[in-house]
Length: 124
Figure 1: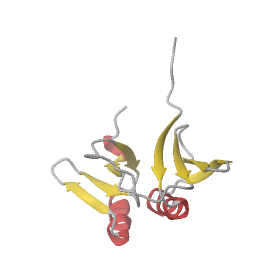
Figure 2: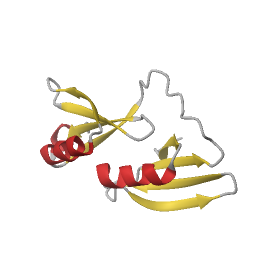
Figure 3: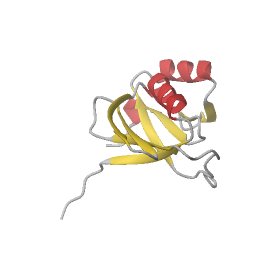
Figure 4: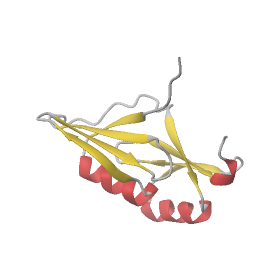
């Protein structure tokens, strides 16, 4: 029996704000949308891997999500780490830097952390 990653899910409070963030910050593009009466699912892709990020918008929700200690994250490898850092600095979304490790984290509009690593250091 074999399993393969399909997608990760983040629940979002403001779908349009989240879509704008993921497009600008990580160059992800919408590849699929499922509209239902009480929720919308939007699948975002990077155009180079098969992995998807599913953004779920529960239309009736008005309260921010409780992310606990926010100890989980997704990681993205940046081909041009310096340019990515400058973009994220300009956007004001860098929430943590570890210069000793050569990585940093950005936070999306809902507070989910996303790790940015240089592509040359990406785990194989």
